[in-house]
Structures are given as C-alpha cells and as structure tokens.
Image (cartoon, rainbow, N blue to C red; front, side, top):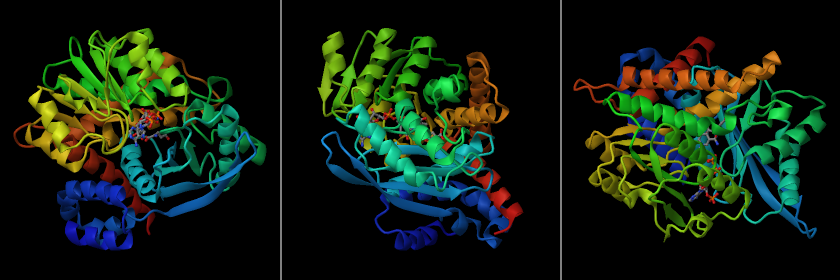
Amino acid sequence: MNVDKLMNDLTRKNPGEVEFLQAVREVLESIVDVVEANPQFEEANIIERIVEPDRALTFKVAWADDKGDIHVNRGYRIQFNNAIGPYKGGLRFHPSVNLSILKFLGFEQIFKNSLTSLPMGGAKGGSDFNPKGKSNSEVMRFCQSFMMELHKIIGPETDVPAGDIGVGGREIGYMYGMYKKLTHEHTGVLTGKGLNWGGSLVRPEATGFGNVYFAEEMLKTKGESFKGKTVAISGFGNVAWGAAKKATQLGGKVVTISGPDGYIYDPDGISGKKIDYMLELRASNQDVVRPYSFEYGVEFHEGKRPWEVKCDIALPCATQNELDGEDAKKLVANGCICVCEGANMPSTPEAIEVFLENKVLFAPGKAANAGGVATSGLEMSQNSMKLNWSAEEVDSKLHEIMRNIHESCVKYGKDSEGYVNYVKGANIAGFLKVANAMLDLGF
Ligand code: NDP
Ligand code: 2IT
C-alpha cells in the first residue's frame, strides 16, 4: 500500500481540502500493516472506496432575520459510508464550515461509529450559518429552512443527524419540529432530542463523560487516576461542560476553559455552579468566555490557549487543530501525562508526534469522544423500542462502551515495549469492521 501515491491522487481530486486530507493521511498511515497483511482489501480496492463519500449534498438555506432582511447560507450533508448501519453524525453550524471540514468530520465518523460497536455508518453535515448574536426566532427560522431541504435525504433508518458545534438541544428541537410537520411522522430521525419528545437521559453529558471515562482507562494502565490531578480543558461548549463535570466528580481539579477570545485560569477549580455557568455563557450566543473572569474574579488570558498552564491531564474540547506542536511541547515540559481529545482532531499531526515520541498517554477524538455518538445510538434503540431507560442504565452502557473502545485500542495499538499507540489502535480497530463489511456487501 503506497500512502504517498494514494494521497497524491486524493489531493488532485480534492484540491485545497486541507482538513480532509489531514484526517485521511492519519488513518492511512496507521493501517498500512493491516492492509498489507490482508490482500483482500487491496484486491477489492477498499481504500479508494472508503475515502470517497457515498454522496455529498449542498443546498441553499434562505432565511429572514428579525428585520425581514433575507440571508442565504449553504447547507451540507455528507453521507460518507453506510456499510455497517444507517448514516449517523452531527450537524455543525459555524461560520468556518466548508466542504473540507465536513468531509474530515464525516470520514472520522465512519471509524468512530465503528468503534462504538453499534450499527451506525458515518456522516456529517451543517452550515456556515453563524449563530453568534442571533435571536431565538432567527435561529428557529434558520433551522426550519435548513430542514426543508435536509428532510428529503434523512430518515430513522437512512440517516440520523445530531448536534455538533453550534447545534444543541434548541436547534435539534426546531429542526425536529419542522421534520415532523413535513413528514407527518414522529420518529427517531434526530438524536439529542429533548426528554419530553424522544430524547435520552445522559445524551447532553455523554461526550464529555465518555471522554473522561476513556482518560480514566488510560490512566489506569499506569496505576493513575483523576484523583488530585490538575486538568486543563479547552472550549466552553457541550463537550467541555460534560468533561468538566465528570473530571471534577472523579476528584480532578479543572483549572481552565477557553473560547475563541482566550482562556480562563481558575486555580481554585471550575466546579459546582461554575460548571453550569458555562451553559449560560453558551446560551448567550456571544462566543466569548471572558465573562467568567468577571463573574468569578479570576485571570483571563486574551488570545491565548490553555496549553501553557501546568497540568497533569489535558482535555482539548473546542475544535480541530487547536493544539499544535509548540503547545504539545509546553504540555510535555510541564509534566502532562495524559491528553484525551474531546473535540474532533484538535491536535495537529506535529502535536501528535510530540506526544507519541514522549510516550504520553494520548487518545484521538475518534476513540475518546465516541461517547456522544454511542449515546445517540442508545437514543435510537430507545426510540425503536418506544421505551426510556433510566440515567443509570444509559450511563452504565456508555461506560461499558468506552471501556470496550479502550480495550480495542490496546489490542491493536500496543507495541512490543508495552506503549499503547491509541491513534494506531483506534484506526485499525475502526477500519477492520467497516472494511470487512464492505467486502461482505460487494461493491
Ligand atoms: P459547542 O458549540 O457546544 O462548543 C464548541 C466550542 O468550541 C465552543 O467553545 C466554541 O466557541 C469553540 N470553537 C468552535 N469553533 C472554534 C474555532 N474555529 N476557534 C476557536 N474555538 C472554536 O460544541 P461541542 O462542545 O458540541 O463541540 C466541541 C468539539 O467536540 C467539536 O470538535 C465537536 O466536533 C466535538 N464533538 C462533539 C460531540 C457532541 O456530541 N456535541 C460529540 C463528539 C465530538 P465558539 O462557538 O464561541 O466559537
Ligand atoms: O462528532 C460527533 O461524534 C458528534 N458530533 C455526535 C454525532 C451524533 O450523531 O451523536
């Protein structure tokens, strides 16, 4: 298997799609040995087939603001691969959204969903709509207009979207409301729904909780735990919130959160009502974390990332490529022993190299943030059965899924000296199931 040749061909076919190409290269480099040991994959051209989305739809989303002015955004849905189950993956609303970002996310989602062991294929979608400063009614009209197009290609057994950056319970509600009107159906077509209309307990917390459960498993391999550890978190959204909650419950002290404007350093620990204050910050639609420093009288470091702070554990939970080689070196120099990605692809390839060289416990997002989509899968199961599980039941299933993902990573990622390369482990374990399914199904 010639990774450079494959990447050259892919670069020619997808010019300028930097994030997509970055995500594909990482996977291909990890699976070389497995592909070479299994000639049936190359014989069936699995690699060329897996890097091409089944379909990538873009559509116009026109909506009226509160003054009556009409705006146009672009909507997307990338249905990447449905070999092991219906397409599944979130919707992102952020001004930076483009085809490359959604293709990288859709591609990652194939392997992440495979790792969960639940029957879900990979997809992603969203829009370059900027929720910042929009009123509730503007967000509603945008979501309704978005769903007017999206509903044509989704369905509970076809493609089941959910949230991601800029899409939380409120947006899912408005989109689900419109889907229900358009189709005259009340089915589990979206996940992350409200509890009164088909949602699952623990879904809001699931990505962050799952991330911390995964980190806990990694720490255990070194006889360590969260107890007494200093934790640096980036982001202040859904994932950062859940991670802060669980890390604190397990005895860790979370000292940072961050936004596009800079980071907060709270040496006493972000715990209790301070964690829920993050929800208020997000709901304000202002895109800034700074108000936390006024509310609690702590330091705000404008324009900086939290990776310069001394910590034992780092949980990057904001967005892609938010932790580079220099940040990684700072973390290592400051004694950080574990980096567990809550966001999708937050570490650059240079950063990952630094972590692996220094034998840091490092988990890639596709393994470590799979708790969100796994719990979406559990929401789909509950919808199909027309039953609701208790919070304890969902949480214990989530916990077990994260332990199993950790085990799969160890199985395929442990080297002869005992160091676990979780990037390799996650990519191989995720790939094998999908590739074998593709063989079984024919082309
Ligand atoms: P939220 O919208 O709740 O929060 C996202 C956070 O990231 C916010 O703090 C946001 O700030 C910040 N952010 C977004 N884009 C940028 C940017 N370009 N530069 C700097 N900061 C940025 O989203 P989530 O918490 O749901 O998502 C966070 C990460 O976790 C993403 O990578 C997402 O793909 C991933 N993820 C989410 C899952 C889920 O279930 N929600 C599941 C698995 C992974 P702001 O919006 O103010 O720019
Ligand atoms: O990146 C992700 O896994 C998500 N945004 C969650 C997807 C889902 O379908 O729950």
